[in-house]
Image (cartoon, rainbow over all chains, first blue to last red; front, side, top):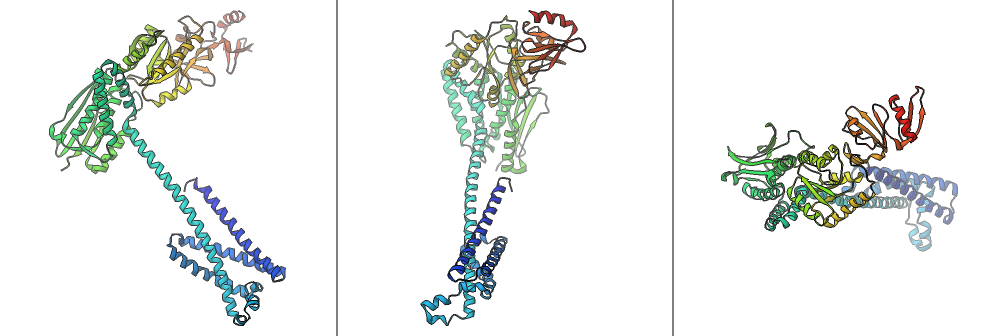
Amino acid sequence: MNDASLPARTKSRQLYWILQVAGWGLYTLVKYIGAATVLGMPWGTTALELAIFGCVGLAISHWLRNFVRRRQWAALSIPKLATRIVVASFIVGTPLGIATQISDVSALQDPGPVLHEYAPALRASVTVPIQALLQIANWAFLYMIWLTIYFGAVGLREYRTARLEQSELARALQLAELRLLKSQLNPHFLFNALNTVRSLIADNPSRAQNAVTRLANTLRYTLSSRQDELVTLSQELDIVSDYLQLESMRFEDRLRIETHVPEDAAAVHIPVMLLQILVENAIKHGIAELPSGGLLRISAVLQNEMLILQVENPRPLVPIRATHEGIGLRNAQDRLRLLFGARASLDLDLSKPAVTTARLRIPVQK
Amino acid sequence: MKAMIIDDEPPARRELRRLLTDFPWVEVVGDAGNVDQAAEMIESLTPGLLFLDIQMPGGSGFDLLTRLEHLPQVIFTTAYDEHAVRAFEVDALDYLLKPIDPARLAEALGRVKSAEAARTPQPDAVLEQIFVRDGARCWFVPLREVRLLSSEGNYIRLSWGKSKPLLGRALAALEQRLDPNRFFRANRRQIINLDFIENVELGVNGRLHAQLRDGPEVEISRRQARLFKTKMSI
């Protein structure tokens, strides 16, 4: 249970007791006024007896509430619940009805005087057992109303929390999707690319046109790809080459590229955007950190039904700032695990001095 | 006004140069693509204004500023960097987001002009402000607001407002560049700002003690006491 739900619980518990005391108090008070004024019963003993019945009634209703909570009646279907409410009301109503019949306040439920006035013929048929049954029915009816109100309140509360939870869930989902989109879009690349385009418009208009096309391709590919999608390595290489052309315009001679992918390897299926992320990391944490840049090498080879894909880049001897490549890399590893289980792997090899090698192993799909 | 552009991407440098042709009073005297090259060029060309990219190979724009002896006015340029923008909430002239909006550039240059007009002319050798980095925070510290500079090994501890940032330089080297009319070497380890002196008392050991506003009491060494008296009587 979290902290936020605690005050709400205390609040609903308070409300429950306020309604209990007010309801039973009001019920007893109305009865008392009736007994003392209309029937002219002795006020002292009547008040005492009614107070006792009120307290016992409240106590039983509270016990009943704990009982139905323990048995989880709120989860039942409406017909089942209705049957149980009627049966339970008669069960708790019976002893209370008999007790009322024995007590002095039984006169309150006695239909005798009314019948005497309007239907004298029926007066004789109201015997003591029938009077007792009427007392029982009266109590049972009271508990039916009580339980109906109780389940109505519980249902309303549950409906409201469910609606709240639903809207919160929807919001959380939207946020997660947005974050994913943002991480895929790589805003740093996007704005730098736009700046390059702005510069090229004056320097070299045809290169600027080319850059816009490359940028559109890269964005379309990023936005339309799904997390679980597979593409051939050659498809992925097309988009990586678009991306690298854009980065070459930014870094000019600081970025040199070498690609070695044989035809059989290019036909293998890999998760979409995976090579792209490795190449982005190689530029961000390698080339961009080095004043004179360096060589980015992409190579692939087929070995024992496995595709081995490598991205190599030079790196500064001392890392300049804490690297954030953890997130992109971990996301890539998660996707690999979901798609291929333990058969695929992705790791960063830092064993060579001043060179980072990202190595991806993927089983060839038949 | 002499200006320099520091950015690791050649197209970005060209683009800014082109945008600056609309402002003939800004003369771009050079550009650099990394921190080492930039530091060298700034010391020799002494520009009055820097356009500085934050993410660069071989250290960030902030790293460059902490290294500089000659600190010009700075306008940061960045493509997308929330940290940089946040650093600006503390103190700086302005920052521009790339691609640069010409109207925003004009606004930033307007600020440079008014800052320049508000500043009292000083001999070039005198340092007016200093760039300090303390953990994740960065400040441009105007030296006239610093009340005390204390030597701590190879570092200098600045007493500035409520902060006490550390500067990666030796006190003796910085002393040459301080305004001699404002700063005074109180003892082997400390330099005080005369504007902050509240009162001066003769201590039990027979030495002078200067009480600084908002700051500690500083002992003036016997050797410096005579010089101090002459200075204060002027």
